[in-house]
Image 1 (cartoon, helix red, strand yellow):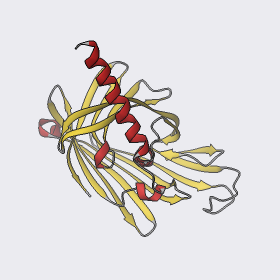
Image 2 (cartoon, rainbow, N blue to C red; image 1 turned 30 degrees about the vertical axis):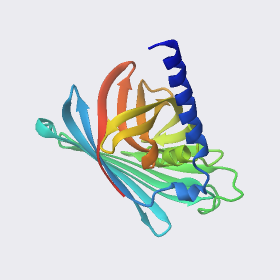
Image 3 (tube, helix red, strand yellow; image 1 turned 180 degrees about the vertical axis):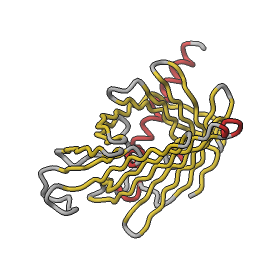
Image 4 (cartoon, rainbow, N blue to C red; image 1 turned 90 degrees about the horizontal axis):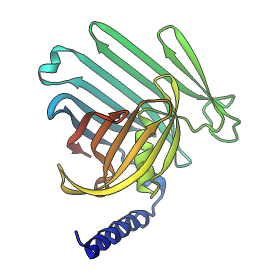
Length: 253
């Protein structure tokens, strides 16, 4: 690539990023899809070993986001099924989860983790509060979580909230997340813009890295700019080793 071509490529990326930042000027509620179903194939070494179904629905003023994951193909012999759900509402344009549930069936055992988000001394009102207290239940253990600014998300609600942030032009975002009973700091960092082949054809995407404090895993996600920033490709790493890649295979709104 000659010098002029390199300059043109850099300028086009800058222009594309600029367009992303100025293209959305609506209220935050507008950013949130009321329902969708997204299906993914999970692959390693080009072999499909699992499938995910992500589903968002709105019931009254409440949203429910759930993910069902199961083994696929010959890997069904090693039965491993997971179900996660998050129930949340929108208050002052912010996502406020109320309950999170994780269930895993594997090798004849069942693992269940539940988190209830609540507001200290305010019975569900998010106005004029000093802080929030949430509780997680893991087997017979109850864990108390204190959140001074009531900003806590769960593993699922954070995914919806970050897509909402992307649509409003916010790319680098940090979160306090109650992650299956553990308190974690999530950090989303903008990496690049790329055009890749997806179920939508040639697709403009933003590439974002998710880092979880105190966790050896990191994730690269390609969000489709012109399709509500739905994740179309996801790579999960442990340290620097790629563990698997998830590809969007179906998206219905």
